[in-house]
Image: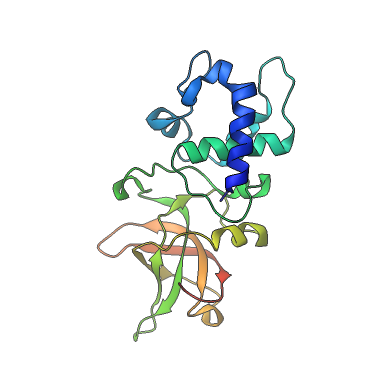
Length: 208
């Protein structure tokens, strides 16, 4: 989702421009705390683009950061809060497609609503489409398949343990069977969790 290089750039920018208000170790001060439960509560379920927009208006009184530094600060904040690094750099486009979920435990995943997840597309002997090895679901505002750039980033998402029944997958995703896919849909909790599918798109040709 972001690279180590972005985190290091963001750390430097934060210490120079953000630390006077938001404190050492993002602990807060004049500005809001940017780490721990307070950060998750403030931003849970809200797109990263909203947080990036907030960063773009900082520091008060300027000088404002350029876009590269803004994205790097966002990467540093996410890394500090335990979100995973990847091989594809974070961009403003990727930020528009991702929202923050409380990641402290499996029970903190969304219980309903429009979500995005990544897993292996399979089919049962009864020809029911399933998503196996699903990553933890995250809220999304966009029911459509993510852009190619975003899906390149999603290809590095760690496999999960969740399994979902896929409902109303139309058109039938036969050509994607056995591949790693992004699925968006309405989450339906139950004895077997289901997704009322709004979009399926390939992120990798092989499941792993």
